[in-house]
Image (tube, rainbow, N blue to C red; front, side, top):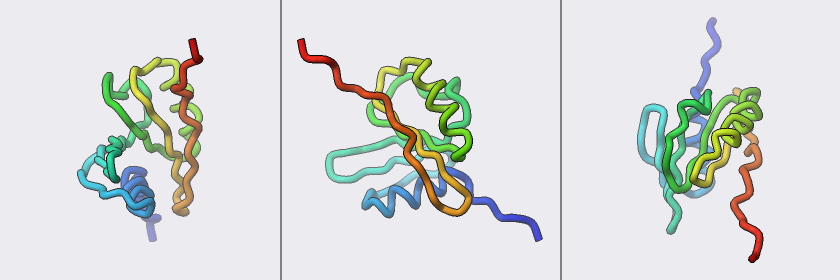
Length: 106
């Protein structure tokens, strides 16, 4: 019998739903909303495919690919706040540290 694999974006749907977000959308992008916060959640394997603009974004990929994706996204110097979630087949996940957006006080 073949192994059934749940795509990373479906794992992200579950993660955000479990955190109390209202989640809608299909394909490789979701919108997760809770109170005043709206997060675009995108399944992404390569930073070259990252959107050029946005506000709050979360990229989801397989756990073993998450550190490389984070490194590529940092190098891309995107103009929005983002994070990466690395998901495992067993359902566990890890948020790969997002870049700091705080600016030093002047």
